[in-house]
Image (cartoon, rainbow, N blue to C red):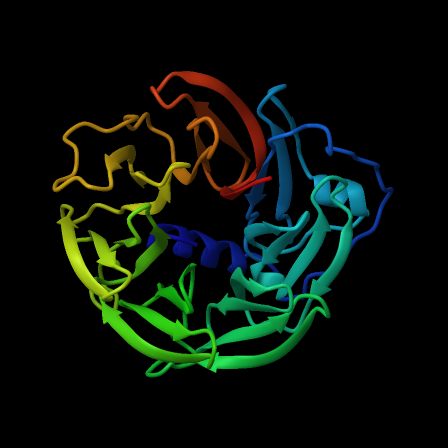
Amino acid sequence: MKKALILIHLILLALMLPSSCMKWEYGLEENFDTSTSGDGLFICNEGNFQYGNGTLSYYDPKTKTVQNEVFYRANAMKLGDVVQSMVIRDGIGWVVVNNSHVVFAIDVNTFKEVGRITNLTSPRYIHFLSDEKAYITQIWDNRIFIVNPKRYEITGYITVPDMTMESGSTEQMVQYGKYLYVNCWSYQNRIIKIDTETDQVVAELKVGIQPTSLVMDCNYKLWTVTDGGYEGSPYGHEAPSLYCIDAETFTIEKQFKFDFGDWPSEVQLNGTKDKIYWLNDDVWEMDVTADRVPVRPFLPYNGTIYYGLTICPRTGDVYIADAIDYVQQGMVYRYSKEGELLDSFYAGIIPGAFCWK
């Protein structure tokens, strides 16, 4: 759900299916305990829209072993429809399942469900402000939901100005002091700034069409990349750009323009937050202080569909998700920070987001 091509693919899949809600299916439970494994990586496998085949995988970098479908195996229940993202707070993993309208809370060592937040529109990401307050962004909704994670309850909403329910899209969240910055992606072209004490949008910054991701580096600079929309879109189509934004002044400091027809995505940072990475067919790497993008990629395009990206905060290893054809099990490739292939393994269908334990 990151590119127009992917959106078309999902629509075609939906047309092939009968209209129905996600049904939880139950089987036998397995027992897991990864408490002694140290570093671990969760892979959110989106699955196909309306198929209900989204899954969660767990990879141990030390032993180079992967366990697929760990949520289903631990809970005897399917995870749901389009597994979008995951974050960990105090030993609990919060798994956002977009088209099932739910956020699951799981024990990160046993993968057992400990709670869930329901009645969401189409959740994308969750960001914690405290143990008792978090925001959940949405697509197809002009509101950001305010929740109490301890009680798994929705407690309020933040309505984004000049955004309709039909074109509503809020995505990733980055906090700087009491302010939270959110990129508005689908059919949008702005970053919004929220005062977390008043739960109000207090400012916005126009960027290019469809900013797809948002991170903050070691110098408190926000980075976002726009995909430029798509040909024939009523909201416009333009060359994409990579933006560097000062969090304090909320102004654009740098803009790196790509060629028309490029489709960059997935801006990520290394552990020290002094290098950024992104996908644009190839995998690219750049110092956050650079004044121009590199000439050569970190990893060249090899005919595959790079869909997700993460960097190990401890070792600097680079992990790339390959969606292959959006139907069969995807692959994850692990490279050293020097670009040497260290491992590869099968995950679930459409591996996209990652979460480090």
